[in-house]
Length: 200
Image (cartoon, rainbow, N blue to C red; front, top):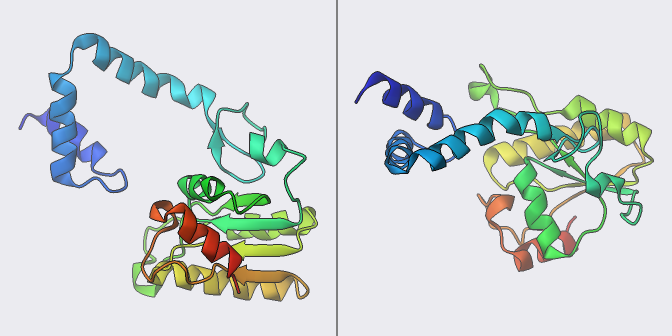
């Protein structure tokens, strides 16, 4: 494989859920497409950074001005006393599609690494979360994290920090309508509805 193809495949392999073989297949697929498609594909990546930015309130990426808030955070009809904490942007889509939740969101941007995995891992926005709760009159925080070992560890650590900072804050976890090892992103709408209803 030529060096440019290998370098592009290596770059794609850093994406979530993409391994080396899938990365090579994507590169070959793109090379097989016509020139206008490849040019459009390239222009998209050149321009997306100028249009998409993180919401300053929930940290979800959206088509908003830099320093602005997303449509969900700007919606005055949303319940402002409840905050649901998720790992990544795509988890919000699953919860919104369930129709069972009408409050606010906060995207951690990752999970806490367990002791043996801490090296070179980005830390989630736990300090930003604590600041957000202190400023916005939040009464309940729902921890909607994946039921994986890292998700459970992160929920436990956030629970501990929140209790230390806000003694009267109600903190709940999604009910175990979610099977152990499940990721919010892949849960169906009914499962998410049940998990929200049976949070503890």
